[in-house]
Structures are given as structure tokens and as C-alpha cells.
Picture 1 (cartoon, one colour):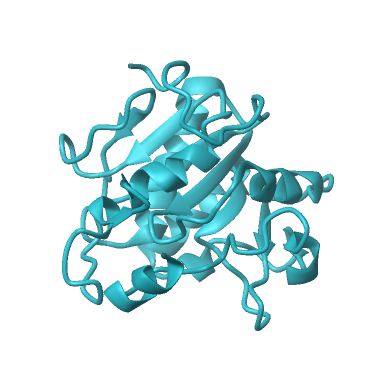
Picture 2 (picture 1 turned 135 degrees about the vertical axis):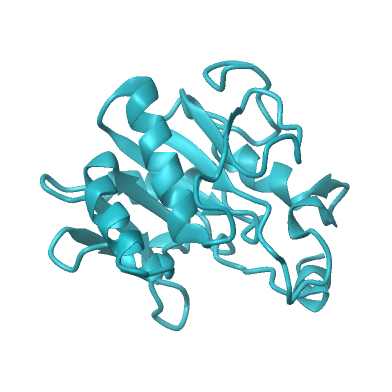
Length: 207
């Protein structure tokens, strides 16, 4: 499928006005096995995260070719394999811009299976003119770049940081073009959205 129409996962919302991108296929070194395929409530974590973005008109899966099957999602190869989520964001922004032109992309990792359409709608509502990123704070005040909105206008900056040797996703946003959503703003819409799964114990705690 081409990533623009197809399966609607359970819990999906009406169509959203931005592209969705999920990055998968990382090392999962702390988890001990492929985190994307670990099961929560009968479904792989990858499918849980995909469900939160099912309402996006363009859905991109940044992952090694042929590694996962996700109906309705457009496979996007990681153009810098092994170089982390910043490289995956570059691939997602480039693919989205090529497919639909300039615009916003919701970028997520597979370790946040409690993401919901309401979470993304909350971030979308916080966008302001001139913004190029929208990040939420977790419960202890840390910005969450792996569950954020990025505008394709951020692509040249991301590429420049990668070319300079940067690999951390936190280098993607810019201080003067980023909107921050406080944790309190998520409490009604998506109180558990930022529950992270790094280890089998984290997964067991969610269950």
C-alpha cells in the first residue's frame, strides 16, 4: 500500500492534517530483543504506536526494508543505517516533503505504545506561526523529541547536524522555533502517552 489509505487500526481518530512517521528497527539493546515486535495486550508495540497516527493522510514507516509488515504505511528506508533516530527523522521529513510537499510530520518511536490520537491533536493545537517543532514535556519536565511534531522546514537543520556528526534527536528542535506543551496539558487528553518502554520490566508495568 502507498501509505495514503488502507487499514485503520483500532482507536484511530478522524483524519489529521499532518503526516505520521514511526521509526522502528533500532538496536533495542536495553530490551534484549526487537522492541517493535514485543507484544502488549495482544498486539506488537509497533501497531500500538501506528494506531495513534492512523488518521494521518500519509503514514511513513522508517525501518530496514522488509523487516515489518504494517498495512497502509509507506516503507521508508533509513538512509543512514545505524545512526539513530535523528537520521530516521531526516528520512521521514525528506519522504514527507517529496510525497505531499512542505508540512508537518508527527514523529514517534515504538517505545511509546500509549500514544493516542488525542495526544497528537493536543500537540497540533499548540502550533504557532513560525514554529518548526512542537514537543511535550513528560511528568518530570523533560522534552520528548521522539513523540513530537516537526515541520519539513526543519530538514536542512537536521541534515546539517548529522553532517556535523550529531546523532542525538534532541538536536533536531531549535530553541527559537519550538513550542513546548506542558505535561499538565496532556492530563485530560492523554495522561499515559509518554510512558516509555525501554526494558521488559517497563513493558510488564504497562500491562
